[in-house]
Image (tube, rainbow, N blue to C red):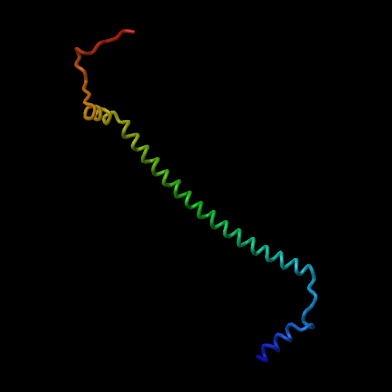
Length: 105
């Protein structure tokens, strides 16, 4: 305990407490604010990077879905498929030649 009190007495004696120039305090505040700014910028950068990755994943998902829709559209455009659906699901048939009426313009 004596050692501890001796240390504090020597360290905080009037001889060791000196006047700190104002520019030292200003410099310390600038360094501290710079450090806090760096922490904030790093945090914001990581958050934006995570958001960027999520948006890129969403973009890739949309590209896959778009490709699948284009493929489905090309399949539905096929005349054979349209004819098949018309015959099977709608029970449509080709009319007999005698039931066809020609309209002149």
